[in-house]
Length: 213
Length: 322
Image (spheres, rainbow over the protein chains, first blue to last red):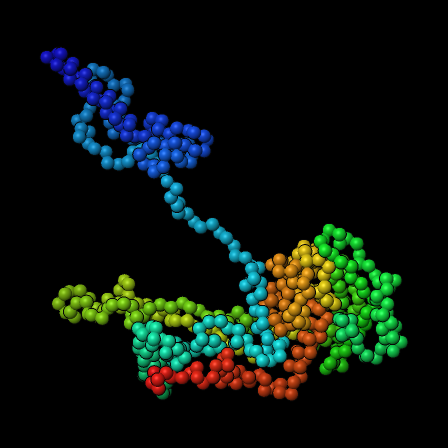
């Protein structure tokens, strides 16, 4: 009876040691899996890293404190069985290996502030030739300098006016290349015409009256 | 060539003119040539520029001169050395270079310059343009949920925007013609009053090194940046190369001059020919016979076709009216 108990104790103690060793293998930071080739380049055999060679990382300076779920304090009496009643069969499903490697993945941070160049050619020469009808010979006008869609050069209007002008100038191109867009524009013109012209205006709410009653 | 262009018989005695003309012939001999100051050895390909003795010019003819006002004065300098030489003092028209400094006019000009060329391309799709959403998601009554007509209505996720920006939009408008003329004059006045305006005989510099221009600006305290204005749109090789390598020193012809650039650059350096041209143009617009009608050109603009596109640009394609 006593020998059986001793055998049981020994097996439990041995299994505890084996589990500790097993977990030591799984938890990479506990044993030196990183071999320092130089101060900057490290050979890493941990399962999480893609490349064996990697640059020195923050993990090397701060070895992780690892949670060992099967930890038993050293000062326990060898004559006492380890208390596995609560932890028996429990599988750790949390990564306990410390910081994950970046593997050269992009680190999302606030973008660095780059002030715009106030003297790049576009900004340095902004406004050039705007007074060409005054200081030139009079053949050119500043609206000839406007770059943009053809129907908007030297023209300003509300949405309906802009769409009508666009169709007048670009109907063939719209019909051949963007038929759905032409259809949308025609629908929009109809809608805007009704919105602008067939609705009561808020500004006319009190018009035609001599006072509220 | 420049010296001949500024010769005027504005009451100068013939004797001085003859002496001056004789001195021109002595240019070829070495006795009357003045060597440029030393100190150009540090710059590559510097050459000696010779000039007749000073003063070269002492007066200028100003048109439409008001009787009760004195002309403004400015030194005529050179750019062939770092320190430069003062060739004489010239008159500037007071209506242009001593106008009333109306800052509100300057503000209107700058706002116009920033806005008239602006085209905003922001656009959002309305509920009619978003793909899908033609069917009623569920019957009007019976489901216990709110009534909805389309899955692309603005209240839906992924639906159209109700009052968003609609299409390319232009902010074009034209400031009054005379307001813009006045703006140019006031900008020149402001530059002159703040000692940022300098007149130079020409833009011949001895070297194409951009540091030469920077040294001139530093030594003569012309400002942190400079706008060089010539009357023609061709510049001497050295000057063109030097300016192209410095971002804050820019060269322009007279027709490119504008209020925004004058205020962006600190120093404004005009050649004498540019001063002549600017004065001629601005005084013409001030004293033109259709002065009052010019202000109403805005209405004529509306009927003019842009970029000489005629009525064909406005054809209503296939006869259909949209």
